[in-house]
Amino acid sequence: MPSFMSRRTVQGAGLALPPPQRDAAFPLARCIAERRSVRGFRDRQIGEGALGQLLWAAQGITGTGGERAVPSAGALYPLELHVLCARVGAIAPGVYRYRPDRHELVLVSPGDHRDALGRAALAQDWIATAAAVVCVAAVFERTTVKYGNRGRGYVYMEAGLAAESLMLQAVARGLATTMVGAFDDDNVARVLHLAAEETPLCLVPVGWP
Image (cartoon, rainbow, N blue to C red):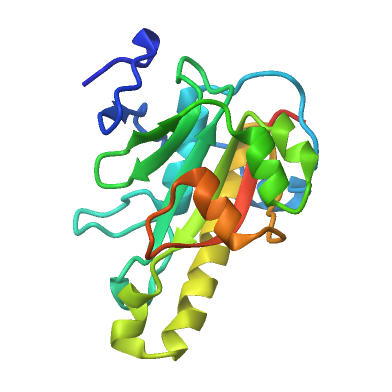
């Protein structure tokens, strides 16, 4: 498995994230009390371990049967996480896809695309100050094939749960976030190279307050 310290970003190759911590002592009630929506971040990188912890909190594998960190209707798991990394440890800037089953990132497109993502988010230029931006996207058909049109609501519920779990984990790490829902779907999909069947549901910029 390639090392982060080598800054290798071979397209399609997996970059292993540090194992998630499952026994942190930071109280959940304190995370809830201290969470705030922050729009603008310090010019400072976050660690790859911190990013991995946030992704695990949103969609990580937590059970021997493949159960994930947030509930999913019918255990159908329609969500996909994409990460625009700009200042994350030794990870080279680029757009990555999170693979929960291996707790790793897969490079999709190299380069720092924060400015383009800010424009796609209706000129919210402050997004470009984030060290990383997580996009929660969904393949609705994974859920609607079982639950019909009502399944779309289940997917939106799951996306909210994933974003909140990520944001509370960020508080425990001393990081700041907010959830962004105002954006042009097609432009976000283009910048982040989403698959044709994926719909972006929210963006979660992450950085130091």
